Image (cartoon, rainbow, N blue to C red; front, side, top):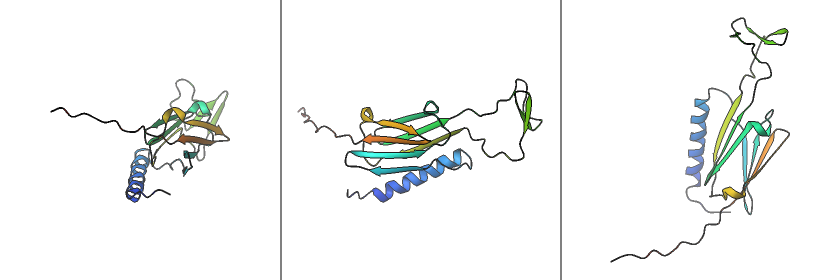
Length: 150
């Protein structure tokens, strides 16, 4: 277990960042993410039900993991239909919703990582709506000596 005197501060900043991000995307719930530490780095598990691998963009930088997912709706509006009649058209049938809450088509989530990761070694799999991202810890090279000119 690492002793990090700033761990509580980093967790607070992560929570504040997520609250700001949630506020920018409306009242939609955030994407649940579990981040666990392993001997070699970290494993992030992200719930993305209903998304295919092609719908997901995964970005990893030094100490941040970002997941963006966007999917098409099942029902498409016909050309010229602005939806003012309260229904969508699916082929020859008009679909009228009594209640429609599943209109969110995209989600986004950023997670700050406790340590730098090796971006080239990141691996990701999507199985049954669960994205698993393996993030190997980066082992920094030793510093170099800098000569000082007189």
